[in-house]
Length: 363
Image 1 (cartoon, rainbow, N blue to C red):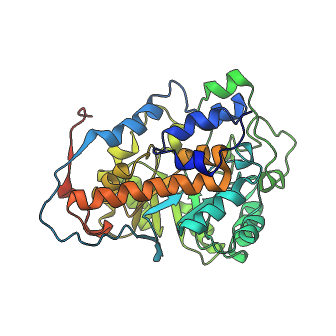
Image 2 (image 1 turned 120 degrees about the vertical axis):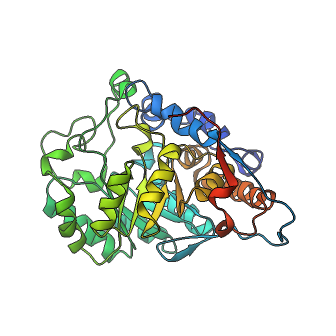
């Protein structure tokens, strides 16, 4: 495997797109394909990226842009960017320091990170290695409701400030790359502790429908802690309305990185209708295919409260560890810092729907 990149090599990277090829040379092929892949024909995987490029800017001129503020906020806490690190599985596949390095990079950049249930590290270990990080915890239903509740309680006790319940994984999508490669998730302490004799390819995460979670059960999930509850995996406007009605504090417009139901709407195309359905009552975050500061600007113009970025940070971790992730964040920061004045905006808060036009195919 190729060595990790040094400071000079990282400084020469000018686009998030460059990290993927660098990560490929530093990860095993099955592990790389697990992270890179989607489901079925990977139609949505391609469209998630392309959909952000369907929008064009109707920028403004002669506005007061002598200073520019790229800061954002998530659930009332300020962030240096309107960007958070999305939950992703088993980061030790990318780098031995795994989620610890990712969390330290997030803390250094003053942006939030959401730790996955299927992480390589426990929530306690991540909080200890990155005590200054703005931590949230992504929740899968693991084993039974009793054990799942214990994960929430452990996260709350370790100063995580929100629970993000993933709601779009009753079963796993048909992932051809993993079937061809024989991929199997490595040991993950939060999942392994749930027990179960049949670990399987995905360590017991493949069939969560057995616990039968429905909208009616969200009251119980909320009762497990006093932390805000975020629902991740919303695409339909009706589900966005139901999320508001059932007390969610925020939602994430997400199709699980195109890893679940192929031919799902790209998140960029779903965002406007979900924002309209929510009508400002709760925060709306979005993920899927965001690779440029311009994508962030489009998302915020369409009404998102913040964006989550996943794979590019995973690739950056593989390429250069914590320093690689810090470089990736700095690229997005610079791109957004240049985009705002060119749009005629002095802050992220100035972004609005009048600045964007849809140019892509009619869906």
